[in-house]
Length: 402
Ligand code: NAD
Image (cartoon, rainbow, N blue to C red):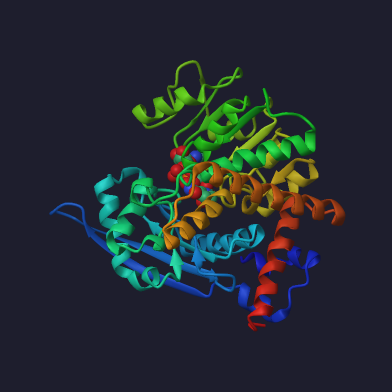
């Protein structure tokens, strides 16, 4: 169900009926059928979706996900979150997303290249017009963005490119950096303590999770547990994240990392000795089953949609503070906006400026959210939704949409 149809949002914000009619459904949904020959013997066919949720504030922006469980509904939900995320941080983009339904774990780089080339072939006009600007998400990274660039030769048509072809220094770690900054800022604010020696668990050690863990580790936090699709690892004294990154490069999974015990993904969520939990893998992991067992004091959502509405209610009742996804993981889209501007103008942006912009924008949004939450006695999630929705409604008014 669309967030804009949720009865709980109505309690906090007056959404004009015309705006709700527009926002409760995506503006555009494209379904593609991708057929590729990975070798001369077998044709692989998979479905893909490109969704524009809303473009009142700018072109549709959102990553490309390749995963076995991708659906049109999930892609619609993720596009809607992009509308809210860009609005909350004041980035002049709208909300979009792509999903390709194929198991990314078994794909070789060559196979991904073939899929992406066919994807570009099928939606070339959406991309060359600048109406939809993709970026990495689960199952895609800088290499896939480089392939899109290679097909189009228009630098601003895609973000998250490798630096060697006009990508932005700092973009690949931008989301994780923003998640780490959110965690540090929120922990200081709510618990009046520095992050040093604070115990953290990170679910999902991919792009977002590994960088978030790395930045927190650098600043002295103890990353006691991390996980990936297969399993988790735990060491109460903290894991060496630099060594873990090297191990992962070689082995392809975190399991087996020396001086750590194996734990399950659910055990990681419910660890009793952590203060901060960072879900940075997939949706709906904090739900009515897991939320009652969570002991962390602060949850910083690296993933999109890791908490269900039932899970959220339980966290609120338990007094667990949440920094919601549309705020905590907005570093990626902030980095993408800087890359897009640099690509359009041909300018070069130093990495220090990228980090500063991400940190400043996230902290500014965080302060607005927590002020409203305190004033109106809302959760941070609801305060974020109110501010972002109001921004979208204002733009609709300005453009005469409603
Ligand atoms: P990724 O593919 O690089 O990493 C995902 C990680 O989660 C991997 O370690 C994978 O093994 C693990 N994982 C997959 N399924 C799992 C499961 N069922 N249980 C536990 N772990 C599982 O993806 P990513 O880019 O790091 O994205 C992670 C989340 O962050 C997604 O929700 C994505 O939408 C969100 N996000 C990503 C970006 C970005 O810039 N990449 C930006 C904003 C939000």
